[in-house]
Length: 331
Image: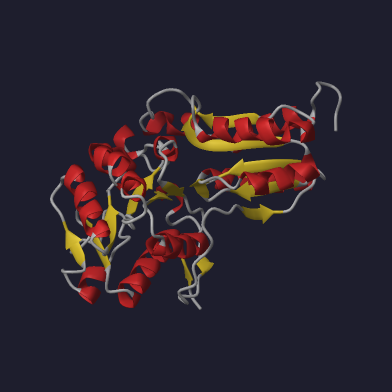
């Protein structure tokens, strides 16, 4: 079996659901004939036809709204925004309508739509092409927010998102679209939503990260292992609703935690994770939980992009200070 990239796994999942479920409709700007700006939908229009894989005008408000109408009438729309930074004109439909239909109709209607968007920095693009504002969507009741971090998880989680009866914001970290290859069987098996994935076992410290930030986090875990420090690495994958129980289970072993994310620091999801740890598992902590994040600035242009993104050095510094708490006390 050939190994595929994350973006190819997205394509594979979309193709599987188009073939398996006639209710699935893909649409978005340039996703048809051109296969999308990152080629995530490459070849799908030719294979399934222009009625199932549809190009739209450059009109994100329309894309978001049409998806709501399709979903409440029984279709399974998958709407693509070219970049996360372009999704904001569609927020009214996503937040005010898609997220509320089940509540508004007392369960009579649901809104099974998937909103896909490449997100995050690291590809030398302008700031609107490099946004990491997942916390906006995680704050909204009624929305599920999913971020895959590997080809296998992209395939399985996207299948689950399309099959879910409620709206899912599916954010694809474009910095790792082609950074990793895995064998991904096209077997139609979905991965569970609302569950963390334990990527590495450890007993000394818990590292929580998602999306592209896992690349550096796993590198740090390998560096620590060479020093005899075993870090447990947790990928939440579904950011909302958050599986805090798996994180607490890890803390029962380690007692120490560092959260890593690319988004700006203030009111980022790291703050919510730490708040829940303090609320539900304060007695397990041997040290305060630290965050390694982006900065509270607009995403800089590419010459300063690497200064903004959390790197192994910043993560290692946070880990070492957490392990050394109280200062000089060691583990």
